[in-house]
Length: 400
Image (cartoon, rainbow, N blue to C red):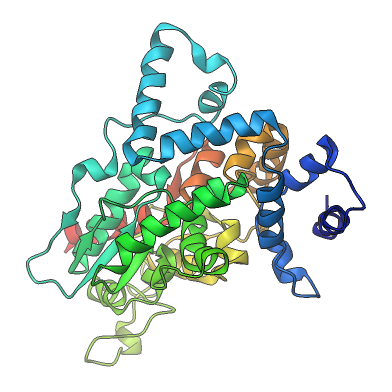
């Protein structure tokens, strides 16, 4: 259903011309909240915020959704609860195959492997000997509980750039999943905790792995609750705008298209390097990841809410990857949308799978997109951009 159609239904409902029904409830909650319509609306209506408000008003209508909301609140009230619950389910599944049953079957279909420990179990402060600054990380639930290696990649990369790194112990879920279920008060509670946790830190930036988290803690908090984490930045934007990363590329003698040359000497055309590091025309050019053809998958909130699209591609090109042009499109995850509308979610994903057949590797900047893509694509690597950055830094440290 189009955004215009949803807004028309919402308007009639608010004005009392429509009664709440299963069909209307479904129309309001089947919006994936990608944010694309906010840019397209000629009247400048923030469709996402409108949908949020209506969901908050009708949240008690659907019993299945009420149970889902209670479950999510239970595991998110304390950060470690979700991880413990997932580990317990995995243990039970070894005895009784509960992953065949709904809703646990979703875990199996997503091909999720529960790690042995959370990211925050590995520490909260990661120091370097001569720090040039301090960076805090907004870990988010998916990286903390399911993909701690993505978190380690960012910590190692930031340390290599001479930043001390902080992972606040008191960070909780950003609240976006709760807001999507119409649980505004619970989302506000999460927001208050996160704002308190991050605003007391003396850091240059709060860097996040997930565009949805960053959009919500920076823009959503302000729109909905009046305060926000203003120095929050999405990870690819942080690296693209960071002179330390540019210097790291220059020191590795790699091309830095899209970056400032921060070295003291101007770059000579004769000494200019390709992305691979060898002189132009050389047949012995070192190619990071060989000659893989890479597609970058744009997360919806990166493009439509944070206005990020070129930045990650420039980063990938700067480390020597061949980027294939592809049509932008949603993967179909959408947080709780994946749980409530499985068929719709997988139908959206199928379009991406067909588009991505031509790639040897897929890179994105959203851990939730990785979950969704991996549920159907298992014959090629799917990586978060910080993993690529960290592998690049490590490879050049070995070469150097």
